[in-house]
Length: 245
Image (cartoon, rainbow, N blue to C red):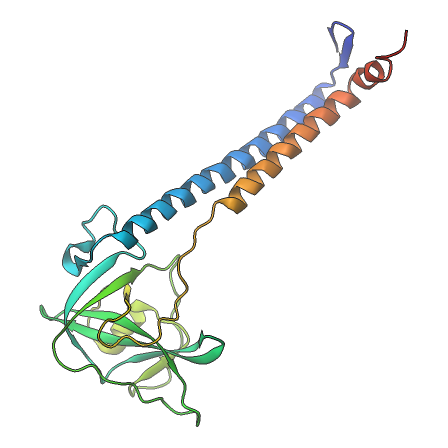
């Protein structure tokens, strides 16, 4: 089939046209998907900024708050169960290997939450480091750490405390403690009772990568469209002859 647009003549092959339209649809869909991901990241960045600027909310009211999520600031009152901490191994702070101390915290209503106090250096002799206890009734402010995905449990070969493990699965912690715990770990804010070195990286959300990929897929679609036009028409001949008499 031949299509004429003035001096421009386009030879249409239906099979080639079908392949072209399929390719264009794929490239445009990929660009749109990346733009959608960028918008999701932008909304997440806005939410994190809003959570960082707000005052701490009592833990029992937190999940009803419209901004609840990762890095949401909460306040809890109770006492640390110093005798039954978890030690998360292979943690690094300023280039030094150590452990993350996660201590159960008993709320005044009797329920239990897991509070990460932060990083502590390992024992030079390979044993358990001396963990400074936090005694008495305390009111502390922490942020909720919501994992991106379910953390798988690990094999634990000890029944004595503290329990060392490479990662902390909350359901596994419940089984080891023998009672229910709050479903997310809380990370102590700075200057709180019991806080150690806050080794967790600050959350950073960037849309730059997704915008870059969207531009890339759009440019590919444009290049494919131009190539298809040049290969199936006399456009290149017309361009070469544009200055000839």
